[in-house]
Amino acid sequence: MKVIYTNTPGSERGTCYRRLDQFFGVIDGATQVVVEGEAPEIVEAYEAAGIKVGDQGGQDQPETDPHKMNVPELKEWLTAKGIEFDASAKKPDLQVLIPQE
Image (cartoon, rainbow, N blue to C red; front, side):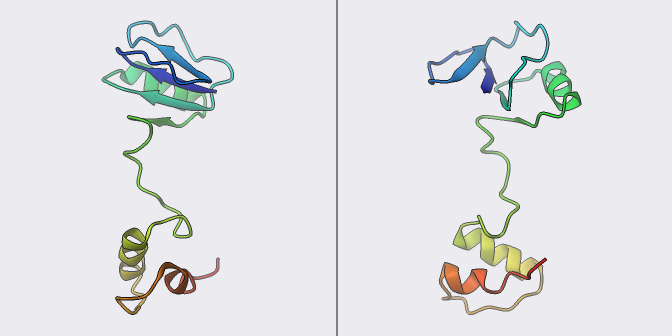
């Protein structure tokens, strides 16, 4: 279940909304938590429970799996790894260059 702590509750289906000032502990069944605003006590409690906390829907977290990256991210990742590629290469051609782990 997705849990969002915010001062402007919404109505997203299947999402539990809580106000930032109404934190009474980790909600059982939470699998994704978003905290919109400053509430370090909420973040710390969920992280201590092993649940990752995002901000604004998790959009602030860059993709870390090169297989899921878009083309500009993948090109940046390959460059950082020292892997050469054709600047006009399409995504499938770039994905072939990802080292197998």
